[in-house]
Each structure stands twice: as C-alpha cells, then as structure tokens.
Length: 271
Image 1 (cartoon, rainbow, N blue to C red):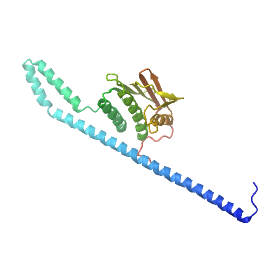
Image 2 (image 1 turned 90 degrees about the vertical axis):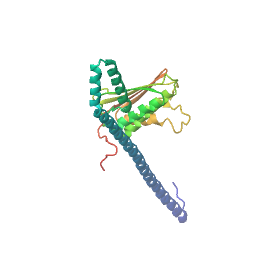
Image 3 (image 1 turned 60 degrees about the horizontal axis):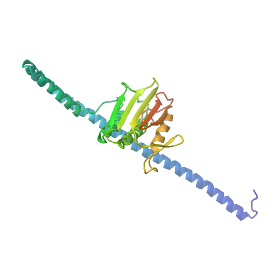
Image 4 (image 1 turned 90 degrees about the horizontal axis):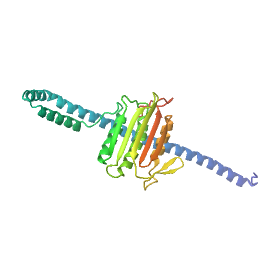
C-alpha cells in the first residue's frame, strides 16, 4: 500500500488508525460489561423464581402436615364412633364415613410429592394445577427415588418448564374430551434420565430442516423454547427428540446424569 507523501496526511491517517483502534477496544469493553450485567440480571431473576418455588413448596408441605395433624387429633373419636356403629350392625354407615374422610383428605392434601427435589416438585405441581384449570387431562408417572439433583435449578426450570408448557398449551387447543397430556419421568439406565411427554395436538407443526417452527402469531417472541431445551440437552450429553404422529405429539428428552465438570446447584456456586 502506497502512503501519501505529505506528512500532514500521514499524521492524519495515523491518528485515525489510533482512534479506530481505541474505539474498537472501547466497544468490546462496553459489550463485555453489558453481557456481564445481563447475565447478573438473568441470574437474579432465576434465583428469584427458584426461591419462590422453594417457599411455595415448603408452605404446601406445612399445610399438608397441618391437615394430617387435625385428622390424627380426631382419630380416637372416629374409632369410638366406628366401634358403636359396628356393635349396632351399621357397617354400611361405617363405609360411608370412611369414604367421606378419604375424599376429604385427598381434597385438602391434593399436593403430591413427586420428588425430593423442591424445584422439580414445584415445576410438576404447578403444571398439574395449570392442566386442571385448562380442563386438560394430565397423567404423570415419576419413578421412585428419581435423581434430578445433577441438573442445575435454572436448567431444570428452562428444560422441563418449556416442554410441559408447550404440551399443555397444545392440548388445551384441542376439543373438550381430547385434551390429554401423558408424562413419564424415569431412568433409562443408571446414567440417563428420560423425560417423555405425549400430548394431543390438532395443529400440524411446521418444520424447517430439523427445527420446529412455532405456530403462535407472535413468532418473533415465541419458538425459542425448543432451541433452548436442545442446547441444554447437549450440555448434559443428551438429546431432544420431537415426533408428530397424527393428532399425537411425542417429546423425548434424554439427558446424562454423568457430565464431567458440571455445576449441579444453581444459586450455590462457589466463588
């Protein structure tokens, strides 16, 4: 490259190059600071969600314990009543009282404990309640002693929350009586967790290569959830498989419980 001979022009070009260099450096520093601030905001938001979930979960458990204490307090009275009714041969009345008590207990203690992990339990409990509100028939199987503690709380909310919301929303759009969501959570092997969902769907999902496109009108702000779940599945050495079979949409999330160097607990990282 031939430089102009006038010294003034050369100085001008040199000054411009220096300014360009420092301006680029300044832009990179600003972007780095911006990214750091956004990450802190996201961290704070997710921690708030986690804290609210754990608080709600704890309060629900206390509520259940209070109900059971009330029933246990009256259990002697029930037994005395049963004894007198049995002596009088009124067995049918005993059965009626037992059925009534059973229904009352189930109604007042309808929060199921699906897992020892409070965040995972809160995610499932919230979606079960949401399905009931939307008249969606939801069946849920969680394998006994399932281990999800290897998943960070933030990732758990993103993965399971997104998939469950998508399934319930799709089922809710179907005709009454055909709104079904079937969920199974189990260990496929000692090292792989399977999160399997089958839900009814009356919408033909569009695809672009291996990517599913959102059917929502506001496509700019929707359709990101599946991409997030796919990225997180890869993070945990697993995969996300989506298949549409007529009026049935099948989602299978497989993640490994053995990922080297992973941080399991969001909100409890060591600095």
